[in-house]
Amino acid sequence: MTTVGLLHLGSLLYLSGVVCLAVSVNENNDARVIFKETLRRWGKFIGVTLALALIVHLLSR
Amino acid sequence: MTDGKNQRDLGGFLGIGLVFASWLIPGSGFMVSGHRLRGAAQFAMVMLTFGLGIALHSAVLWPTWSIRSEEFNLINNFTFIIQLGGGVPAIASYVASSSNMAGGALVRLLGGEHSHPYHELGSYFLIVAGALNYFAACSFYDRVVNASRRLVPSTGSGEAEAP
Image (cartoon, rainbow over all chains, first blue to last red; front, side):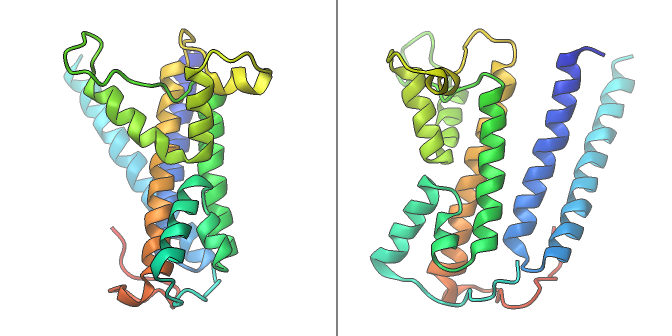
């Protein structure tokens, strides 16, 4: 895999993570709840993204 | 973020001024009004994301506004507006990229490099940084400036069902 590809993957992980963290910081006051909700949102986000990637991959074979 | 002094209502010019300050310096409104942890977290998120965008040789660029121009692209115009949400760092990047001023390493870094292969990717980071700061300023308005009109009280640990 090229450096550009890895950089894009890293960007996906970072940008989705920071957006989930910002939403959780906005909605909650307790640090543990913020951590848990960030992980939950981030997991959902990455899961849906992976599912979409799989669908696109299968349809374009 | 158990800095629970958040039911103080800051109305009038002071509140609006602090919202404006929140836009210029990310998280500053929260810090000034006593919510230091929340303000520091928002400052760190916006500045780190903006810094990564700049490290990828991107910059805030002036778009073409004339609809008759061949270079007109509505996406570029929206991108510019959202990127400006980053406040002072975004304005500094715009000034560095649009003026031909001779400067040191910082000015060259903030001005970006249009032909660099990572320029487009970096602009996504600048968009996210700007959007996060808009979001933080709106959150400050809801939690502090207009706290008495909040529909959901923010005094608990906030375990309400989230989307």
